[in-house]
Length: 65
Image 1 (tube, rainbow, N blue to C red):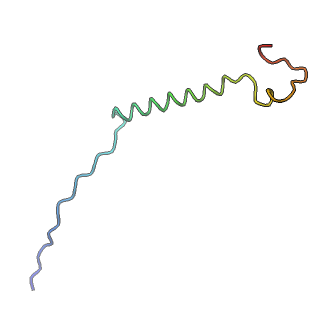
Image 2: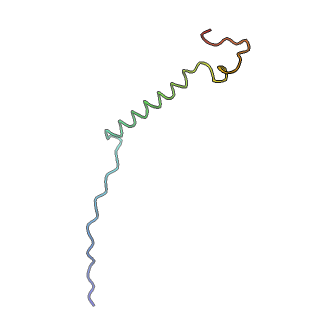
């Protein structure tokens, strides 16, 4: 009996994971930070809550009146 080595192709090189210094990673992080800051700022500009606009104010003075 004769045993021969199987013919196996060489493995493909593995794609390298993105690094923190990559331009696309840095740009996405900056864009996400900008969107998060804009989203957080929108909630802080509400001077009255939503129930104050629909319910009677019962002697309270709203801002700007």
